[in-house]
Length: 123
Image (cartoon, rainbow, N blue to C red; front, side, top):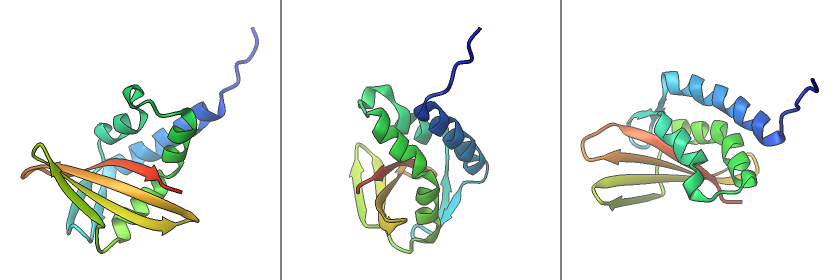
C-alpha cells in the first residue's frame, strides 16, 4: 500500500494544533486589559471555520501567526480597537511583528471572561 504524504496545509495545521493545545492549557495574561485571556476551542474553530470561506493559504497564514498572536497579547500595553456588537465586546490588538502586520482579536460577553477569538495577518 503506498505511503500517503501529508500536504503543506495538513503539516501546518498539525503543528499549529499542538501549539494551540499547549497555549490553551495556560492561556495568556494581557497587560492592556489587565486580565487573563482564555484560549478555547472557540478561537481554533473560528480560524478554521469552513463557513468563513477562507482559502487554505489564508488559514496557513493565520495558523503560522499563532505564536505572534500570543506574543502580542502578552506584551501589548494598549489595544487599538474596541467595539460592542449584540452584547459582545471585541478588542483588537494590532502590531508590526516578525516583518508582518498582525491583528489579534479578543472577545467577551458582558461580565464573562475574555477569550482569544482570532488572528489576522494584515500584511
